[in-house]
Image 1 (cartoon, rainbow, N blue to C red):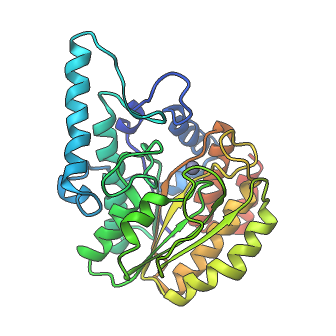
Image 2: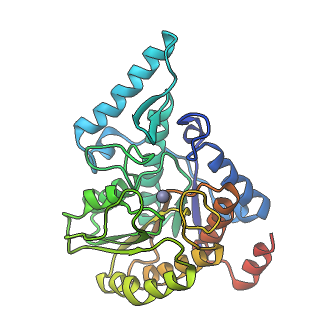
Length: 327
Ligand SMILES: [Zn+2]
């Protein structure tokens, strides 16, 4: 198995103000832990290109792309004139002068990972990217997200690479409302998601789209229940759809130690979900999976959960897994 690990220093330069939980240190925590545990040694680290305008327009209106670029230009001009370093799109979501470049690398990583997996250069891939994407709607940035990385990659696989059916699995603690907004009208896509409800962005409970399967769960839901719901409700639908490729919106803020979410998952639950998704990918999709980082704000829990997820993606033998788990 060869698993790609996509990361770029530009994604670290985007920051949304002091104390914001979606901070550059998240990527440091992930990279440091993968290095310290030795897992990085078995991963392939390809180049990360910038996404093009055409890539972004696979999922977003030209007006939205232009408005984000316009904000970058405005921030640069205001900063030169001694003005503020951040522009707030909403109370949660801000840009600095580097956010545009970070967003291009984030979407570029998702597209490049998709190409590498479809071309057979990699079996699967994890993109350690920020800004995250799954709240970004076709016409709107929100919820820490500027562009919807996973939806762009899914559309790229369909529109340009000729795949006929792709699936998105979203296990972030928040509903992936942006991905649903972009993909729900496309019958070539299906999305399954489990998320805390009622909770930001207060959507997804009653989706009318036939290809969106949402399981809202109350705060304090633990891994045992999540596994049961995956096994009984979500995975059978994923299996029946027979996707040719699976994308994962990998948020780790449903971890029990996360400060933003109130769910009770642990590292072993992320490994279990990844294994089960991987089995379906092996059955229908030649094992093709591209996973993109979404949330996850407790740095230790994030680093350890990503480790469990990527280790499962890389298909390490149980004995080696045990060895790496001791870290
Ligand atoms: Zn989240």
